[in-house]
Image 1 (cartoon, rainbow, N blue to C red):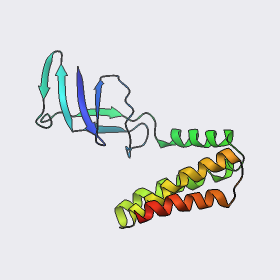
Image 2 (tube, rainbow, N blue to C red):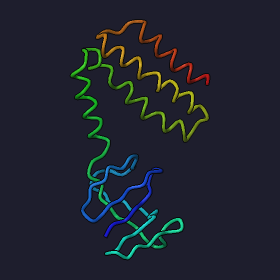
Image 3 (tube, rainbow, N blue to C red):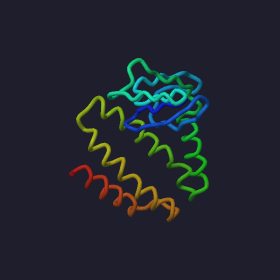
Image 4 (cartoon, rainbow, N blue to C red):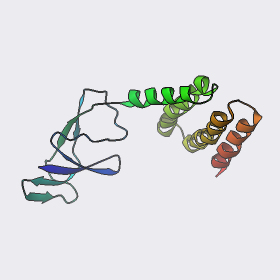
Length: 150
């Protein structure tokens, strides 16, 4: 038996006991989550296709890992890069935490997203060069303000 479900605008195929990597679940590890947007159910050869979803079908899953694993990997990776990265890693984390709230509470979300996108080339510069100077700051402003004005 397997089912095809939709969450976060992506489709997933899963069977009992499968581990799926699903983005953007606001659920802590160990908690159960129900997916009610089931597109297809195959029950031992009997296929039920929804129009658009299968009526009454739900998939219950348990969250195994959460954002903490990704954050730990980011911090570990930062320590393998140049020394300034060891101290600057909280900046993108804060930016990625603040951005979703701007989508919900303010009309400036696209401006904030432009500035968050500007962090990537500046961070890459600092990681490769191993120092903070005006060049990555100007790069951040050029990319961030360009996205801000677009």
